[in-house]
Image (tube, rainbow, N blue to C red; front, top):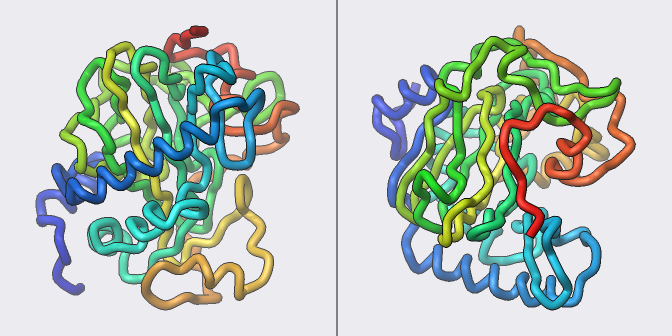
Length: 298
């Protein structure tokens, strides 16, 4: 096996043991500043909107004259800044250390978690939304702001990436959230991913995680890149349709593509039937009576 590019042996061991790590001050400050300039551009785009668009997901408390963005959708596809960062070794080097040289893009998102009202994300496994033929899949979170205990840090329950595929259904439909109590888990076991701006978190696709709403006067934007090993092929869920091989290969960020999926012994629950209300995770999770965190209306 080749030597790690940037992660220490301890960081690699921690990822495999706990299902997540935080690497402090990984991204240069000028890059983070450029990201904030892009966010300002999208805030202006949200001004005047009365509904979600294919680029912007709005907070429930949004008003056309007081724009409140909950999520920027697929930021890599609509911003050169976010695309360049995704393709840089600041992101890809630690990913290669964890899942190998061939890395394919699955998706991206920028969760704004704005001061005072940023919406929570209830407990879930990313794996519930998009099971694959193997679980060498992870999400890199770029901290665009300092993250502390009060501004809605990512909360991860260590070791749950080796647990079952938990039930994320409610009322007969896929609801994108799970009951910690039903799974025999407790929020008391969760670890908060806190670090200065420019740091990154990396969490495994099967680890149980969520985040509270932002109760502070400080923003907590995190830019997520969801990345998969080249031989992990989608089984079901969001963006599961491969289409043409050319389209699938166009998602490769580094390394060699393959037409031979690696089939691992992994637990899978299919995210069907799809809910009557479609949209982002925020909208999907509203269908469940299970609420791990409080929301705010204004």
